[in-house]
Image (cartoon, rainbow, N blue to C red; front, side, top):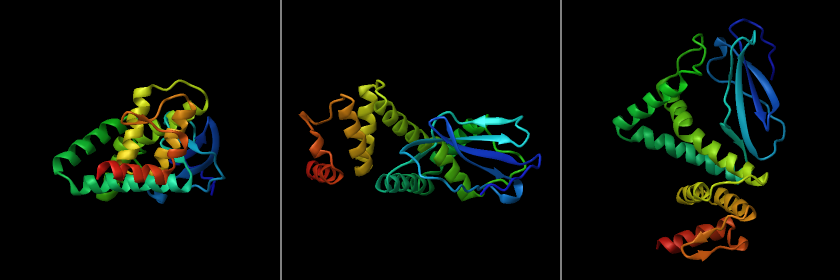
Length: 216
């Protein structure tokens, strides 16, 4: 996939996991705003992106993970979450879209794409705004907490509780199952109301069944 582009306006994009560069590719104005990567098999966890000009004078690195390598069921749940966020904004009130787009522009000022790239269309702009303002922070929190617990690092119980409730509230049963089991292994209690939930009751199917039983 590496095109070997060396023009001054070319930008090198690299994907990294656990501070190890996985793959690089180049983005030029002729290619539009999309670059594709052929990735090797990955461990589950966060993936970060860095962008550098071909002369290496302009380097922009996103310190927090903005993508994730996940098991298929978990990946599909996050894809549905992003699609739901986009649909909610597209079909919602104009004032909400205005606030979202303004927040996106403010966040992207330090890491704005090269001026030589074509501007995004209306739908692409909304996708980019939702990804940056709404979706990327969820990805970062989810992957950072999972990796932290796997390494034995301390995670705030309240922060873990909010993430667990968010996953369950968005019906992301496989993600919730993996996350709550990681909490148990890290010594963070998992409860449903006043009752503690053991590991064997944290399967995705059991979580979904319990949720709808409690909601009916």
